Image (tube, rainbow, N blue to C red; front, side, top):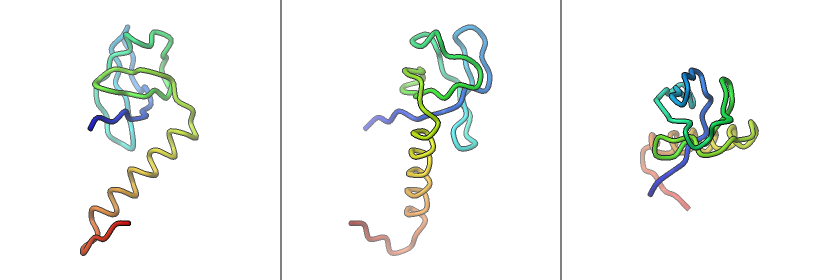
Length: 80
């Protein structure tokens, strides 16, 4: 399964970006999204920024990831 992650562009040099999501930073290309600029929230998939993202939608996704992380750290997990 592949996921696209919302992240903020924190460094940008031509089409080379560094993005940040929940304190995690990694490199991404903005080749497919040339309008991306420093500070934008973008959806990153397979190392490429593929679309701009609304702040509220990004926050909702980050909250879901935090819930998943919390669940994975719970002993005797039961889902459903």
